[in-house]
Length: 273
Ligand code: 2HA
Ligand code: ZN
Image 1 (cartoon, rainbow, N blue to C red):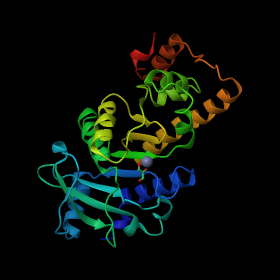
Image 2: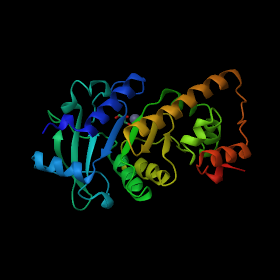
Image 3: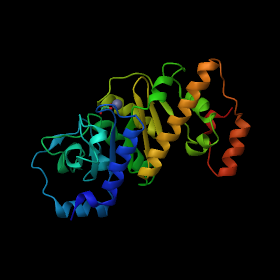
């Protein structure tokens, strides 16, 4: 059994390559994780020997006991995933208390999971519960235009949501719940993970000011598509703001409601006045 031939491993690596080609993953920037299905986890269990060491996650995720994750390695470059997968990514298993993990595959030559492991797992925990087990992918990218926007717009959920929805009708349809914005915080720990995962109860996209974007979805295509849609809207918004710094949202709440009913999505009412 070749782990590299598993469909989810191929999809994972393809997303990494696509993100790198978009310019969102300078050096070792960004990280990605995927929660294996029971069937996928059984196959891994039957074909690997776990590492004997357990490592602390840095937080507690009781809802993810004994789950397995495919995840990017700390210090590893997205651009190298296709050529050097076993050094760049790995599969981990969570212990029965949700406090530690061990490595089952990958992370060759002493690799370890991303420094954002606490945020990834806390987001998975929230999404597993709130989407009834549907969401499996958490993706963090250093999205050029979204990051730039956090230096220009007030860092509030409402301003970002209404201005980004405004850029094309696809936006309110693709992220009808809107998005969250977190002020600058030290990355790589439990505190930023707690704040992010709290927002993930309501949104599928959370922006880290002066840093990047987190998003959650069911499949690799939906996850990449979500990141791509938000980032494209941000690129257009930057262009418009550079010519008209006073641009206000033009799409009205009634227009947003009409869009929602036509495409059968519920536009988050807290952003409709
Ligand atoms: O992995 O993006 O946020 C590098 C990062 C940390
Ligand atoms: Zn980052």
